[in-house]
Length: 203
Image (cartoon, rainbow, N blue to C red):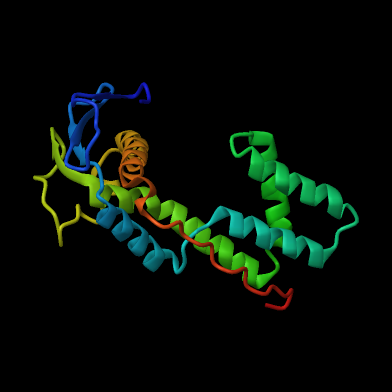
């Protein structure tokens, strides 16, 4: 667990469990639940609705490779190797910085630019959507009474919750999703990646 939060609950092992979190130095506490398989699917559906697609990084990178082959820069082999490196080492800041340069070079291709825009919307909304499904209570000064709308926390939770605390909750939500996936185990069929759309410089 990150150093900037304190969990006051027992270890979480079940989808019926909740985790009450007090971010470091905060007078506020928040209670999250482990998402069930149905709730995890609901998160994906809402993200798909917002972004217009399921975001799969491997598909985006495969499309970037195809765009680079069509652009055919003189150092194509080096560019493709750098994409491979960035995919293999997502924690490597230098590799990711090089990937951003390559991505910028592909942005004049409208189909690729649209994929990146959808990716950005997906990533931006992911913590909000997750917390709307997983947050079941909050307590403390500066917070309104907790209430759900259609079974979900308010849409503007990223405005209600102070930014540092929201970031801490988003990280904890991701770890609880891992618990939920582990409970599902091998009973869920693997998802398939969408096909790579045809790319043309003219769009």
